[in-house]
Length: 171
Image (cartoon, rainbow, N blue to C red):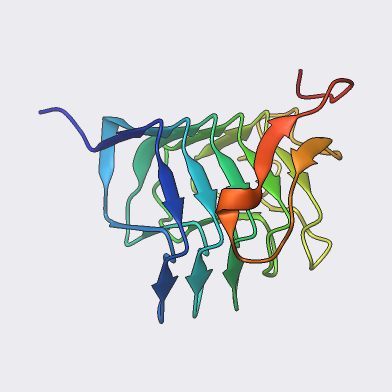
């Protein structure tokens, strides 16, 4: 009963030799779980999921209203990587992904049943912000400059302000 919950916090400057530089969840399928209003920045993964990796057979959690910036991985999903092919209870909604370095910012397997919607990605180094099929893409995923106050890309999140400036499409 109850789920894992993370809200209003910072997850930054973590390193994993494998997947999940910031957060690593295995077969976590609990619709009461959420990761929301987090700042997930400058995490490094030796494989997939610089910011978050959801691995195993199933994934169910709400990932919403988070700011991902400067996360890196050598594989897929520099911000969010989902391996689970049974992800019908996974919602990835309204996240900002900025300057993430990997083959994509969000990676979700085709046919997984996840819902990926209302996210904004910009400056993904590969040029592929979303590795998500039309089945999982529930619309309104944007590739747009969020006009952040400051982002230095120097590996020190303490001198960045990821708030949108006046005129940003995020407001």
